[in-house]
Length: 135
Image (cartoon, rainbow, N blue to C red):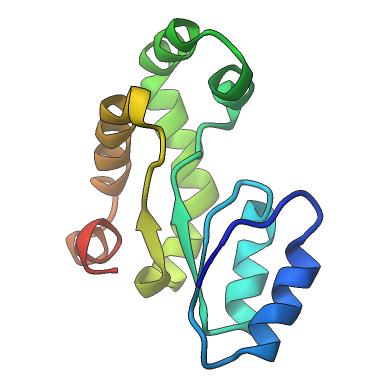
């Protein structure tokens, strides 16, 4: 089941995970991002597709000018990759079979694909294979 919880819905999501332990849930949402480690620790049926990992430019990404977002991404590329790695590295290394890269932003999709590949490229090759392809 694909699930995209909103702000404050992580507790309800946790209940659903526990109520349906034989159902795999793929969750995508930056609103649950800060809880995903705990959710994964408590529930083996949750998988996470991560793509909105550039917090510094998220407001611009969602509500601003597309070109301003692209410019900020290109200007801060390596800083954003470093920040994403700090946030996700331990989680991905702990649960490499439950993370996958995804994007649903068609108009800037190629930029996000490049960012995702650069991010995934920072992991051990075995983990790269999992989060970039097998999962």
